[in-house]
Image: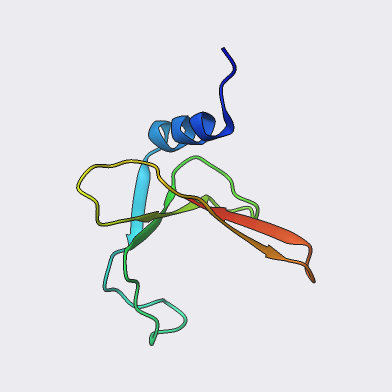
Length: 84
């Protein structure tokens, strides 16, 4: 059986500890006017495109499911970043 891309992402998310370091309603550390609408953190023990842990947003659904990924591309810097 071939494991799909999405199944692998699900396994990565489920096997990593979610650390929420910016809870819903808190201000961005460098831009205090920006308030986080959802819990924001990272997957402990992972590495994203920027060299830091993979970023995550925890939504408001009662069940903890992986249901989206966000990718941003900077064509000038030639970088790509993903968020679960």
